[in-house]
Image (cartoon, rainbow, N blue to C red):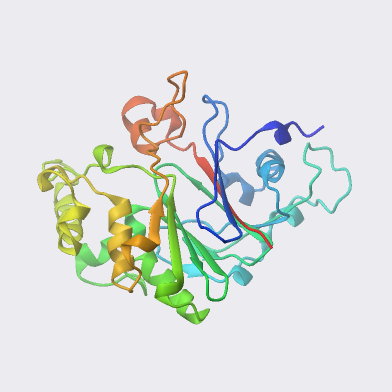
Length: 300
């Protein structure tokens, strides 16, 4: 029996009306489940079985999030974890019996996701952007951490280190390639940290200079991106993403989010619902590498 099939999503979201998109979120399950997939590239039967056991689709695309603002084509993801494990449908002795294919092999924050497949991201505070075009049913999913939204090297050296300033720019470029128009695109932001606990104080002895550059850049985008006292450097990632989409003609009413705060959310037992990298820094250093699971399904 595949015991992983008993694991239920922490939350299921249907982000857009009249669309075939579903989001399944997987939290820490009272500290028992780490959804990180770094070991998939080694590879790891245990991690493969965990992800395969909860996915209702047989093909998942999971580029390695690299804070590089790149959105690759799903066809570039040619490293199949099932093949690396030598699993071809026969009994191999590990628990998964679904035999799904998980495709990796590219350092990118996101990719387009064809009908009948899914996107997987392991995260712990960074938002996931889900962008859907109603014109041609184009779906792009992407990791959206702070450094996915600004080229930090450019801020420090005045030299760009990548083709796109933000992953939002890369998403919109690929949406145009798929003949999706800004007015026909809906965006959903899921499973991220809120500004109260995402701070970059200018007084920090180590990172104060870089924090000042980051804060000034996002404040120039719109003061709403840095709520409260700018010297405290509270960054509102969801608002930054909204403002960046607005530069491409995607209006605020086309963008929604789930209201989750990975840092503070607790369940009825007062246990934390989600893994949080920021919270782990202060409260549980042993949890720094533990991740939530974000599964986006593009049903046919």
